[in-house]
Image 1 (cartoon, one colour):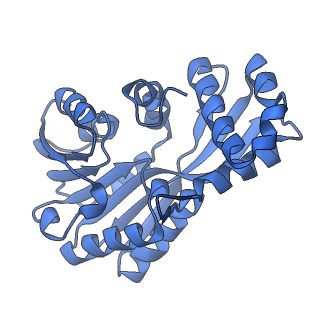
Image 2: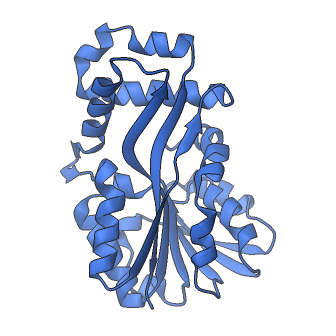
Length: 254
């Protein structure tokens, strides 16, 4: 795989991300939205998608640990949106950091966090009364056409890998969107969710192949016996149509 957070991989997936995110939730955002803090912004694909759908001018506070990705995101800001770089770990966000922010947003981030980190993020948003739009959190639901009898085993291994313990942190993985929804509701927010599945297949051969390698590779880390199978080679030989489940979560503090 190109690398989960590499500029190459992020660029490859950007069109699929853009097609998948819920436009309906953008329409529900309370206005005005002038200051947006983008957590784990990467190369800024979310700002390129969302900024043109909101009134200008806007200020985007781009938050990430990767300096190179931050510079790309700042350089590629849409017209009418002014970038501000904040190089740091998104889990260290405080109430004071959200002062003046109208929206906290992220893309494909929640599943990489722990329950405690999501709780803390929700608490900070609630304290600041800052609305949140968290897009493209994986749900673990992957469907193929045509199906293969081995799909379920690989799917289960991948989802277990996403919930793994790493560096003393137990990741939420596909439990993240529902966990975040419950946490926001408990904090007093009105929460609206929408499915935002990727559609892969023959129309996106490069992304589909790269996703398959990464998906199977993670599954095989969890279940090494999978490496002795020809599953990946079979799937790559004739690319299937794939629906990769994601969910968008909008939390509004009224």
